[in-house]
Amino acid sequence: MSSAPLRSALHDRHVALGAKFAAFGGWDMPLEYSGGGVLKEHAAVREAAGVFDVSHLGKARVRGAGAAAFVNACLTNDLGRIAPGRAQYTLCCDESGGVVDDLIAYLHGDDHVFLIPNAANTAEVVRRLAEAAPAGLTVTGEHRDHAVLAVQGPRSAEILGKLGLPVEHGYMSFVTASFQGAELTVCRTGYTGEHGYELVVGWDDAAAVWDAVVDAGVRPCGLGARDTLRTEMGYPLHGQELSLDISPVQARSGWAVGWDKPAFWGRAALQAEKSEGPRRVLRGLELTGRGIPRGHMTVYAGETPVGETTSGTFSPTRKVGIALALIDTAPALADGDLVTIDIRGRRTEARLVKPPFVTPSVR
Image (cartoon, rainbow, N blue to C red):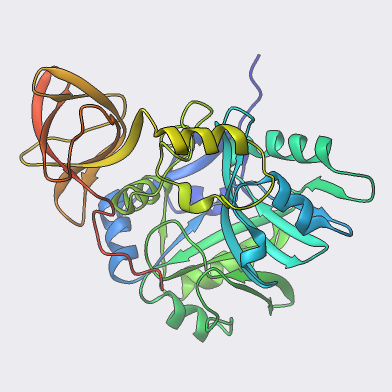
């Protein structure tokens, strides 16, 4: 018997705003809100600012002498490249090179690393780290201790600045601050491709922060718009572009691997795949005509199946159907080549392109 989905600390706020809910990673989260819908929410983030409740994202903490070195020996990216106060995108792989999860590591110091994994994978990431941790290190799951609000868009700095929050720190860095007596962490991170911030705040303090942001004129946005925004950027979603069966090499996420590090989970398998060359890689597809691609649709070069879409949507910014797809490396296909996608039994032409589909504005 399946357990009831978890709810955010802001669930009642979403109900009052007329949210349509959907299950996501074991959580009941807003998909879109009445009076706007995905298209208006998407446009708000690209043109002004939107706020997402992403409290379903996991939270975990590693503390103790050598915490950063331990995390660095487990996860793929090289924490040695960043200083305390910085954040880093990284991957938790298994020994086959498959991706258990992708996550953000926040480096507080040599003895303290805070992690934000994906909702459905948090327990597994915490389990793996806890089992590998040497004596003296603690690995704790803090999923329900913190809420996370993502304020994204070109006006995000202006609006949060007027609320008295720090906004001048650089991309992929974070600072602590106080708001109405509550401590929160202001992170210059996000998943939309726009200049933005993620606010990590105590569970019981989330409502006050949400209310202040919404009252400042920021449009509430659901996970529907979050998905169209991240797809336009070509950002991977675990379970679609990354998984235990899709390695960082195949997903073109090798930039998040510290190849010169002496140790991390999956190192030998990933080094071998990189050396030999992957059998498939993640590519972008842009339809040349009408149609909306979705995930798990077959891609053809002529009459030969050459891959499958992993994500697909209508791009509200570009006004065209776009997709991410795992495409075979043989026969070789170049960006600009035409292929077809089987969209519900109808072959639809698309052009291979290199993501992102829109110009990034994260900095």
